[in-house]
Amino acid sequence: MQDLHDSCSRNLYVSLLLLYKTFGRKLHLYSHPIILGFRKIPMGVGLSPFLLAQFTSAICSVVRRAFPHCLAFSYMDDVVLGAKSVQHLESLFTSITNFLLSLGIHLNP
Image (cartoon, rainbow, N blue to C red; front, side):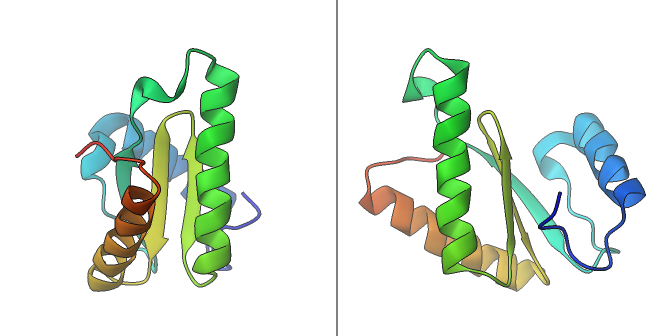
């Protein structure tokens, strides 16, 4: 939670989690300064939940270093990207998807 935007509060983060539980990947918070989009990483990573969490965490670390102006966090096989506009989020997603594809990592739609 340390990487959340300065204007984000813990209450907003909790609201985000509740909204995600209700709406899943279709969640876009247009009223928030950062637009969030959800994608899933394939389950063929391994049988261990620990290794899966480490794998997605490593992906988010690379994304955070490459795009310091954007948000990236994960939980198990879910990766959340955040940007200040829908166009920026789409561009970010395309860049990250192409990078991961070059490494042989395919994202589920």
